[in-house]
Structures are given as structure tokens and as C-alpha cells.
Image: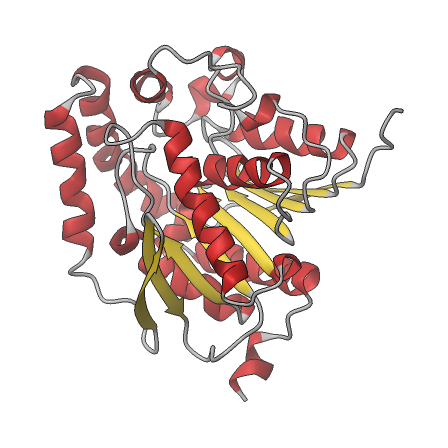
Length: 329
């Protein structure tokens, strides 16, 4: 029996602020340098070691005022509880899966953004330090994320009160985790949120898309090297590998956020369409000329804070959360 399509909302935000355009003009040349290294360096121990230093460096950065952090362990998964300012005990939770190309990044690089998402929504956040390539294979990364979700259930959180959120590679893991939960007979979360998600390891369509030449970061060549290194001999169109090619029926209402000119924008656009066709309500939020995972640029870019607030609004609508101001009072 054919599935009736679900609503698809396309929410375009813009135009880009003058401040973001000026800042990106200064930042983009600096941000291209590590991407150029990724294009030329072999995907091996030296590159992995250099990338690991990013999370070590990020440990020096203070989180937003009022953030509370507590270590967490779930089987082979470890992470940290993050409560943003004004957030206390809550029966709703964010399971946060950090980005970083499946091989770098961690709790420190994303702590500030997770804290802000907690404050914006009023939810407790569990940020997961999943094991990464090349220590483990891609499917083991998903295993760790599933373990953390089941740990939240053991803690007493109802599945419909949990949001799985991820950025970039974490957006991929967010959908991969929800699919694994569904296929294993476990309950799925209340919503999935993907921020600039890399949802399709098959790059052919992205190379043909106009954003391959429009992305200010010129990221496609680096993305190809990265995905080849992560995938190895796996089929990029395998639904287990690329959520965009999976059967999406039974997934929860989802929010996909992307910058209008970023290289992986097409993944969010097509995923939103496929979710709707599978009977899953979806919102595609397109931010004019914003960079990949621009939400990390609070307080430098006004769109970053606005996007965080919009995710908070989505969580309050889908998980039944009260406004963060009410929780703080």
C-alpha cells in the first residue's frame, strides 16, 4: 500500500545580514586552508592526529555562562550531560551527535553549541563522544549513538520526549541512529534535527549541483577525499551507509537546516522531500548564504543565534516543551 505524503514545509530565512557577509569575507580564506590540507594529505595516522588536536584546543574555550556539565557513561558510549543556562531537571532530552567528518571533533568542540540548544529548548542535553573512524568502522559509530539513546530510555526519558540532533557528520549519524532504532524494533525519538547534515555518501549529484561552484568554502574536493577515507570499500549508495537512500517510513517529524550555498545543501533538500514522500512530516529551513554549520558562530553571526532559537522552537512544538523562559522562572 502506498504511503500518503506528509506535509513538507520549506522555510527560507534571509536575506543574509550585512554582518555575516562581512565576517564571512574575512573568515572564508582562513577556513579554506584546512580544507586544502584535507585534499592533499592522505587519510591516515598523521591527519587523524592533527585533527584530534582540535578537540584538545577547544577544551580551553569556556562554555556560555551558566552552563553545567557532568560526565556520562553508557556501556561503550561516554559523553556528558549539558544543561544550558536556566535549564534544570527536565523530562525532555536532546541526544547530541557532534560533527567532524566522522573522524574528529568531540565534546569540547561542540559544548557551547549544545549548551545554547539546551537553553533555547529547555531540554537536558546528552552530548555523545562516540568512537570514530579509524578506531572503529562507521557502523560502530552508529552503535555507540544507539547505546546512548537506549541509555536515555533507561534513565526514564520517554522516547517521544527525546530529540536526536547532529551537525554535518552528526546529522548523518542522527538519521542513521533513528533508522537503526526503527529496524531493531526499538522506539524512535520524538524528532530528528539535522544541521548541515551530510546524508549521502554518493557525491555525484552534489558535483552536478550548482552549489559545487557556489560554496564559498569550495569544499567538494575535500569532501570527496574525506568520504572515500571514511567509507573504504563500502557502497556509498547502500541505505545502511547513506540515510538518504534508506526506506524512511516510520521516522519521526524532522527538521533539516542548511545554508543556501553550502556544498551539502542538496542532501537536506532531497532528504526533506523523501521524508515527506515516506509519510514523515518535514521542515526544510534554508538560510541565505550561511556557511556549513553556521550555528557554531554565536555570537559572531546573528543568523547563528536565530537558527539556534528556531531549533528550540521546533523542539518545544514537537516534544511539548514549555518555553525556556518559563523553565527558568
